[in-house]
Image (cartoon, rainbow, N blue to C red; front, side, top):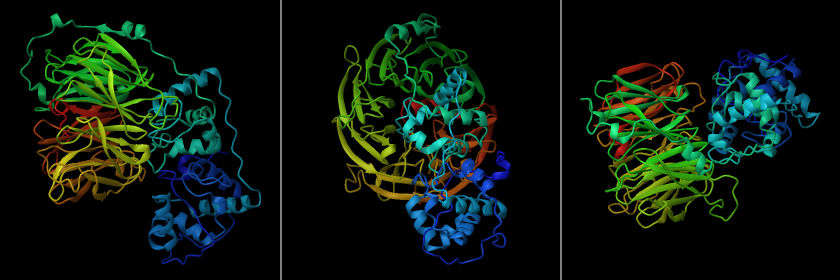
Length: 640
């Protein structure tokens, strides 16, 4: 018999730390058990519950995973009952609970299990003591059709964090050896409920079916298939010039303030919706690549560049009467980043696309997307080790030099690509930290600050000197997006990152000229209600630094945003914004008087808040999975 999600838990938040005990007896401070301790548990039902829900974080007899090995609990059933019944209270009010929190960094949410379900779990654990390690459920045999379908699911949902070859980066290593150790049940539980360290709950949220979860848990225990190359001849063949330059307007063909346009990614619809930032009216909705990751504005702001997960670059002209797709080209099978040339004399002239796969970058004509060159990436990391994959993560364009700054995820290098030279060569490789991800400029646009999120660090690159300036230790899995720059009343200019794996914003000094004593060191650590943050954002005219908790698994914080007061140097409030899905990503309008937040859901919306009071002033409904939003002016000028 398979237990239903409803039977197991009404919350099913994240498969978090639960039911850990030692030989030390901890007296309880209050009566937390929901009924009289009894016995009479059904060990078979408890085993089903453990496999279905608990095995994502815990093993029995195989060693620690995301929580302790429950074969080492020493049969302290009283502690076990109370901890499962009210883990938050037990963690806060007992000395051993505090030790658990210090070691693992998170608290299991209250799954609201019945007394009988808790007794069943205890009965199973006690019965298993005499049997030894719990054997894994064998993986399912996949047909060729199932294998291909599951390979696509992995690409769509998993490869971004774990890599095509599952070597990890933002997410952990999950090659076949590691996956076999976790086991079919553990993998399925992780896919079903996510983790408190930021993995989404694909099953509980309805993104994946139980059949898909079973197939994916089995697929992960097989060797990863080889990924195909994408040679230059195929890239050239993909080029589609829809509207030649000679047929485009020489001045805006409308009276709207196009520099205050917002491009909104409707991720699962494969569309970009463009809104007038003054009136909030929909101006155009255009078809783009699969699961667009970001938009970038050209140097002048006239064009949007959209980059899809399928590697398709889409060029959108904002001067036409209705914003129009004027060219497309595909330089990668999988991509996240793109940027144009911004140095004086090169405005809108060139474009670079960095690939997640194959390990290469491709340059294009910035006005037509004609493919120009393809360059292979080095397949060794900063320690000299050979890599299976080397993904281009963040790319930013200098505003003063004809260069792009390119971060290489697995390699740990930050490369400088010179677009003033023939064939767009890499002219400098700066060893930083492995597993580079996202980042942006400091206030002066001299320093590139990039998260090495699997190593819990921010790397600071002095782009002018082509050197590693500093490495800052942060919290668990920093994920700043482009980051946020503001003037702190004590420390001068600062920047910050929030974290996927920890409820914290880390603020570090970024003012080496006026406040060198604080530069590139942590100056503030701000506690948030939950882990799972993806973005932190501000605007020069805003009193706030805003952060989301999109991947939170505590059941409430995923709908919230938090506002940090620049003047008060503290969290002012955290409040609900999303209604149908998850609150994610921020973008201010040109003058900072409004901030737009996504309600990320199939029936999603954009919530528009007043930039000063943070009260809701408008809402744009009927959007399919809206995620990133990009204001033309702010994106072109790197205002964050």
